Length: 317
Image (cartoon, rainbow, N blue to C red; front, side):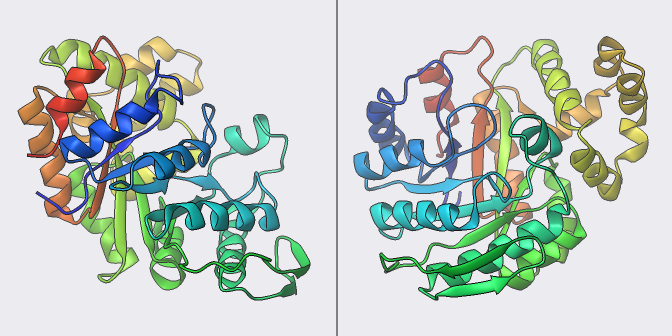
């Protein structure tokens, strides 16, 4: 199907240490990648460090690390350390994140997210090359920083990108883009902004269930939680889904979350969240790959499923 086929870690309900057996099993099943996130569970790097020292067959990635929540120097040190441990198997994902994560949860002003991400990207690229940096960037200053441990193999840096400006930045200055919450039919529109020669990764939400009503019920709750956040709402307006999602946004703004879920159409749900039998789910993932996603990463939604069965059932064929 593809040379890369990933899954999101850590798994819910599994301790970090217990993932060691899982990493071996994932590689045996044909998964090539494990990708973490950094929202409100584990941080983005600790699960990857454990994977790096446990299973040498797996590539590692983080999607994404917020550009705001670590100082530039600390972020460079963290990326360099994971890159050293992973020895060529690590991809760094950097993004603006969102106002709830940055400001409400971490007490940091969420200001000029595009400029902050751009500046952190430029700083990281220079720091990982071993430069001594003494510069006033637009959104922060760094004076006299230099990594004392040389980075022997600089990891690719992908940008989490949702709209044309960030997608173009990913194509112009990074190694590619990480997409999230989009349909397979949306990939081409994003690819046009990134350009033809850069890597596209995407996190794909999967509810492996033949019970379509239950799967859509779960998916609607996820959609209303994510796509009412400003950055995601603007992304879907740009993708042309504004009219389809307008009833949800209106109900949410009026404080009626129940109605917000109810007015999301089956069509929108079926485009944005993969569900159905294992064969149907793998076929849906294949459509993303055919559309140009080079690193698909499944995020298995843990509602009423047996994790062992789901991971095996969704594995590449």
